[in-house]
Length: 393
Image 1: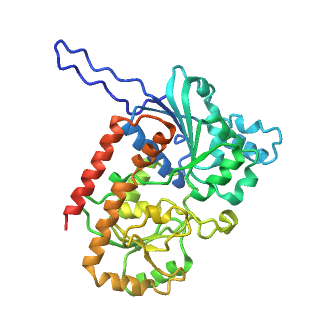
Image 2: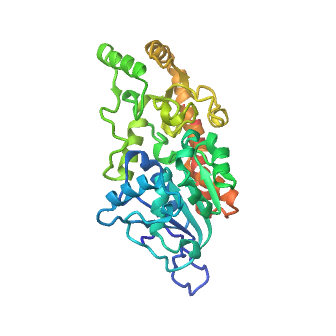
């Protein structure tokens, strides 16, 4: 086990003062980062790091054994036919971990349902942890029938949170207990261009899935008008990154040096998975936090979109076929004062509303867990930076 950030008891002001003693972490949070760190997983590892820096957390790195990938692949295939409902509780070839002391909180962060298996490497977490929470980031209603031998694993947790607002009722019904929605977010301090905004040398930045029409139009602009259009040239979301922190640092540096940042509802090109369900991912918050002007489509059919992204000019809409992207950019470029206002407003709103610490705070409040002084201090820092940004012209 590797202890992350632990709080230290302050020295007494009366002499003689005893030496500072490191407090035992109150949260046990397993992490899979040592054997899987695909690009799409790095945001949730970032969320774990934000909490670990603000609370008393033991990050528990689960390790793979030989042939783990092959064992997991077979287990995942068999699980779709497991009428015994026991296979979801079996270890998929990971090194076993046995907790040696008690914790107040067990916190499992799962990108999607296959991550349920990784928790099984920790043999006695239910006996050692007073309250348990599971955060399942992505699940689509249309796929729930396929997961009938997976989802009952969620019943073992006291509190279950999902990152897809439209899936809350369906998952609650599937597991027979109340499920709560927790939105995605961003490390707003990492992505913020403030207090010293860098030059925005990238005209348009695209990362991840994209609309072919918009992409082709921007390629033509890059060739004809000499704009700097940065985009993915390979399908990289399923590839392992070298280091999740370096990946997020590089992403943040690119985003806050970009004038425009492309956004669209989640998995816009994968109807087989979404079945028409509209959700939106962290791209909106990442681009906003970086102070970029968001170009693309609003996700107003998502149940929480207007509540979370309802400020003026949060997204400048363009047609999915890309037919108006050039004229929209030209109009915006002709009004630098408006561009500056949008940029600053986006960054401020992200600092005030969309940092990971706000999601952890909401989760803890639902579960009746006390918010730590470190979490309150991070919130203070976010508000102070937002105030500084608002003062700049």
